[in-house]
Amino acid sequence: MLKRRDVHDSHELFELMVHPEVFPFVRQKAYSYDEFVFITKQTIEAEERGELISRTILDEWGAPIGTINLFDVQDGAGFLGTWLGKPYHGKGYNNLAKDAFFQELFYELGLETIFMRIRKINIRSIKAAEKLPYVVKANETRQAIYEQLNANGDIYDLYEIPKDQYTLYLKRTAPLEEENVQLLEA
Image (tube, rainbow, N blue to C red; front, side, top):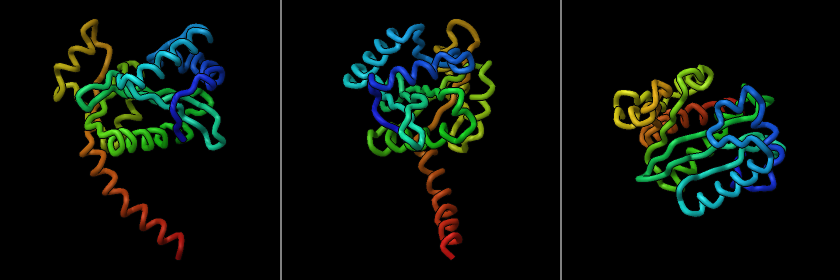
């Protein structure tokens, strides 16, 4: 489902990223294939320095279909950035990728908080974020960060995923999953 970023996936990812319904919402925009390769190399180097965490999202056949990243990593927190190619929208890949990424961030790498800044015009992403039971809208509770994000105008909503909320969510859903498995086996 996820793998470390790799320059070899650049062609497929660039083609998916430039779609007009994807490109406006990508944080690391590249306007040419060569620029995309350069940004990918910079991303890999930044991860080695501990500044960000970046993974390629794969479909069930191992083909690259998007990226999921944690930018501006410091003090046990960072900002989530994810995009999927248009052919993969609405097929469940986003939630699978987030679950795998959150598991790695919280339980392997020891992060405590994941922030999401979502453009107020990106209704699709806002609705998706607000459906998740472990996401907290943080415009008021993290007002200093919210104001910093919107220093140049009212552009973003701020959301937060605290590790404890995510862990509680997992504990609540684990018994349900176990129950479903038992029903299937019966």
